[in-house]
Length: 492
Image 1 (cartoon, helix red, strand yellow):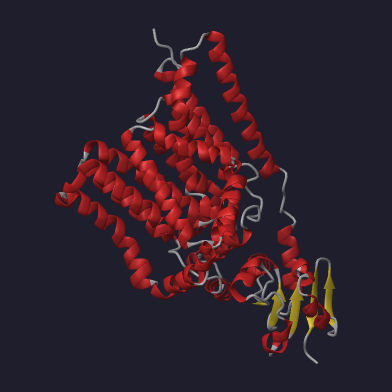
Image 2 (cartoon, rainbow, N blue to C red; image 1 turned 30 degrees about the vertical axis):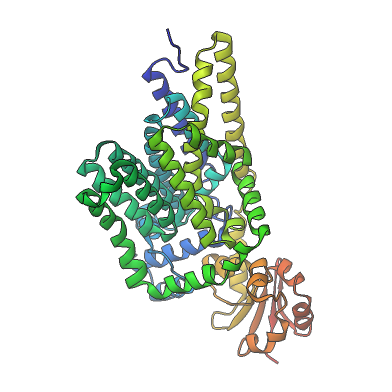
């Protein structure tokens, strides 16, 4: 009799529930810690937008609070529709005020829901055991834990994308109107939440349609209906309603930086960055899974990787600097791993009791170790002191003063916790060097400080990178010399 690792459906279902619970538990650790643990500028940006929405609907909010919140939100740049921010802002109303826990709970629920769809998709192409291992990667990879609970549109975008891909796969199996509409709605919603997922959605949809219908695809009403549902919401927002911002983003991040793709150094950095996030062994093993997958899954995996490469070539700078721009790759790698490990698991199932027990023990140890690493990443850092510090900085700045500053996260920390906004002094960063070839902006001191009352410094590492600026500031009197910040008086 053929043996399998979980012998009955009840066994793998129990393991699935355990993984689901583990994935949720890891993401809810240290749930009230300020959102500075992962790409803080992006999370604070969403927090400021959510605050604006919250105060606009809070009956007890004062006019001053609403005006300040609106001013802060309008200064952070709005490239996507505020979907997750609106959900969180409404949640604030029912939970007694602003709390990052609300955002993390929602993002976790979205990620877990997508995990259910991902597991069923994998289970249709590989054994339940291989699907469980793929799902464990999706849930416990340290990068996955951090990124999927962060307050930004990317976790919701990726979750909707995974569910949409699942329905697209089901449509490829059955071609019913139910799967047509569900695939179109979820994939269209994913693109609406954040347009960058369009590379993956377009590639996957084309591949599944061609695999299923071959050259007769153009005769199918379902195909055209699905395409219309996918395209229309994003078209309305990004092209018709928000055209200026969309054009600005494209010019700033694609056109201005496209020259990076002509350098071999770009591809080396890209691959090395992937190694830090996923482990290159996992990446290449997942790619190898393409060649071991069933035909339908193979077409899907190839299309998703093609979409990822096109995406990376379009946004080159983010490919080796912004980890959250790779969150979409988590479910793709998990799918490939399930396909790659399926033959190994089938072979292990045919071993004797000792062999099977040893194989299971190794898997349990790996999952346990990765879970502990994910837990440690969250638990070992605390940012609970940050709000008090920024409140002190905000309190030191007169409410009506005009201030320029060299401060963290584009001034978002000061805006969110200190309720003060400053004009930013340019950072000395790799991006500034790529765009301008200049890392010292002291020659523009007179121009940038014109009409300003104070110069705030909290990012002393940045100040050290601009010694000419430091020398200029030393000539001005210090209005406030606080612990961790200095406020220079620019008025003669």
